[in-house]
Amino acid sequence: MDVPAGWAVWEPGSPDVRALCAAATASRRAELTLARRIRVVEKEVTALPGNVRQVGVRVTAPRTGAVSGSMSLTQWARPTTDGGKRLNARLHLDALAAHDPEPTRAYRHREATVEKVPAGQLVLRNEVWRPRRRAGWVTELEATIFPRGSEDMFELAVRSRHADLQPTLMAELSLMAHSFRLDDAPA
Image (tube, rainbow, N blue to C red; front, side):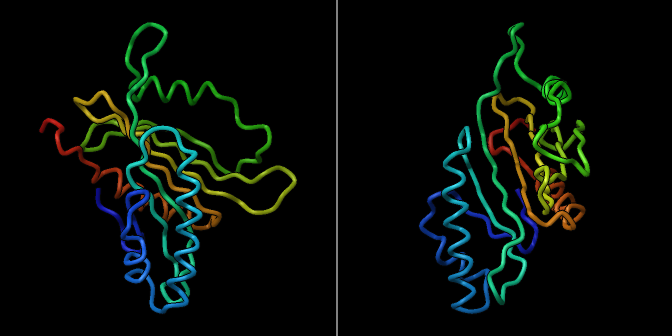
């Protein structure tokens, strides 16, 4: 999977995180700032279901180590429905549509669509929301990829507390999702 410039991506628990911090920043102080954020992301991914393959942060300012978003790529076996059919993009989209909006959130934007990518199909969930009675918008983008010929599914999730970055993050998520490949997938 291709990752846009500005993203620092690693495998959870990787011993190369220190080198990654040094490469993504311009000073020792910025490196320490980024290392703290990476530790937070590493803790957060332990709560994710499935097998987390990659995590990353969007380094907004290499001079300071400031981060404007995080991402994760998680893999798990496709579940089967009550009728014994294996989950696919259309069934996943229908399940998302059946869920009511979270009552604790005020939404600025909320949609889900099915798209084709070179690896197969994906369901794109695009939400901008804030907790009710609070300031501060959150952007959550999620591409659930259903590769052809695979019994697994992959969820590529991007999250940011910078709602103004939603169009940029959407373009970056699209690049990652369109470049996603399985090494052993059929051609």
